[in-house]
Image 1 (tube, rainbow, N blue to C red):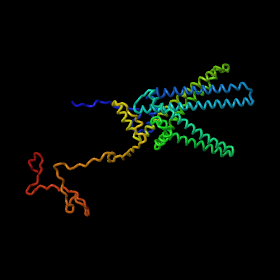
Image 2 (image 1 turned 60 degrees about the vertical axis):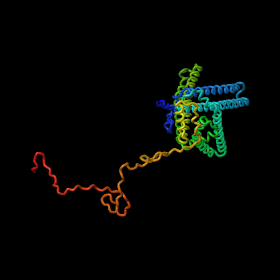
Image 3 (image 1 turned 30 degrees about the vertical axis):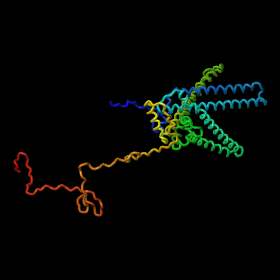
Image 4 (image 1 turned 45 degrees about the vertical axis):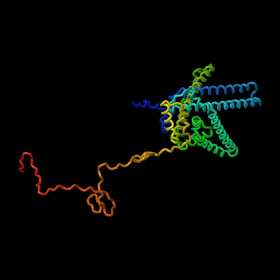
Length: 429
């Protein structure tokens, strides 16, 4: 008996098609990813950001209360009062700065988890948080190091420009103001340019397990021909969620202004008004925190999708992903990571052929010609110099196109022409 191969169902589609896609697909699929695995994406991000926000607020408040409470032990206006006040301000600011950096590190870890999950979602996999963290854990310190390096570069650049502006203002006021305005505009342009060129660094660190500086170089090369589309994704998502956060915060700010009047119109119960105001502010901050978490997830998802699309266009990553999906669905085990297969290779893609052209596909030879039918000889060549008629060549032409002779006319000599008669007329006209 002949053995036939078993039927294999079609592969499950991921959140994006396994071929290069465009700007609209990146924006749309960045939101679709939230529904693919909300526990890992939105749940982890929301819990992490909420805990970081509560810890930051509580620590800063405790540091402020502990430091500023010492002002009650000295008389206002003295040297001790001014020294304690300055020390309290510095201590509170330092606490906020250190915890803010720690919160930023947590945001980078959240971004890494999102990138790892999106990489699985591209090939229609839905991993658990444990599996995603196992992929992020070996490179988590590289993510934190990249975040610290970025923060250091920003602090140094802003500090140097601020010092130059201060010196110019002290010497020539109008020159300092002009330089300050130009410096701010220049910082905006440079920050947008660098944010676009470095947009893929976390994705490279996680999916390729690259060191920080090699990841910076890879991101720089992958965005070389995709600068404007990458900038568009970054700007659209940032502006959209900034507007949403403002829309949420404005009503709560207005409500917070009316709560003390509603609760204590005569101003007698100050405690109730204060509690109501704090409750409204907490609810508003929770709404803003939710929007920020969604924005972080969507922006991280878009970065992973831009990375996948860039590698599809330059390194033919779509073929590696398709091979992986087919082998996985066929039951193969111990498959290699498709994102590590063709790192750094360059696969030129053919330019699209013009519409209506008959050129063959690259890699395939053209259609062979058709030989004459068996059993039929070709027409003999005809001398164009003596042949006449429509097939003859013009004077001076070297064409040897064959001319098929007309069939001979039948001999009609001795025959009478045929006459026609209407039916029933017996031939009498």
